[in-house]
Image 1 (cartoon, rainbow, N blue to C red):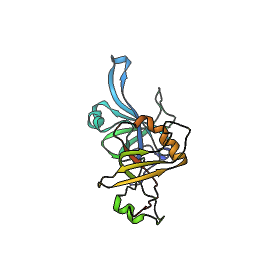
Image 2 (image 1 turned 90 degrees about the vertical axis):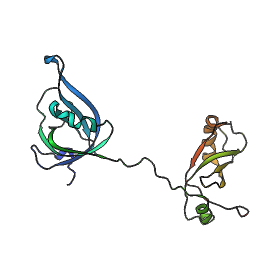
Image 3 (image 1 turned 90 degrees about the horizontal axis):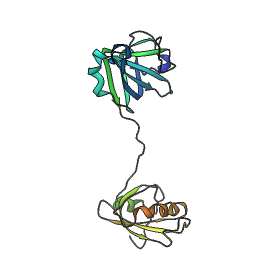
Image 4 (image 1 turned 135 degrees about the vertical axis):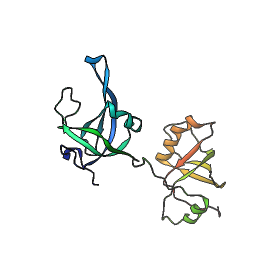
Length: 209
């Protein structure tokens, strides 16, 4: 089923499917009935930055409460759309969404924040000197070679020695801005066991290694 943007939702129980991030969730209480809880409500934000309120009657809330978490992204279908005519409105949207007994919610895995292309020693060796790919490496920092390591304004070359997961050792040389950034990091890692991720390296071989 195609995803309907919040702006295009139609009133009624049509087969509409939406996708949004749950921003805030709360229990709505009645001040006139000694704080009686009458619904579970939350705000959804879609990819077009449109905000809409969703409400689940209390007698239905138990079915969905444990499956809804703030900051998570959900695909939701089989719901009812009503006019947003009440008081105390929390959005500018003309409509509100109400869950039904048959409402379906499915969490969606968001796009990752990072993607690495880690390579082990043999793969780095194959790439050495070709300039075809700039892979990423991850390993335990075993030695640092360089001068003026505590001078945060120095961008002279630093050589970092890494132990890879396959037991092989590699040296990574960094210059200029990268060397400057490492010196800023140096004070926080000196004397500590450290795992480094270094991205976009250009593999080279020296003296057959």
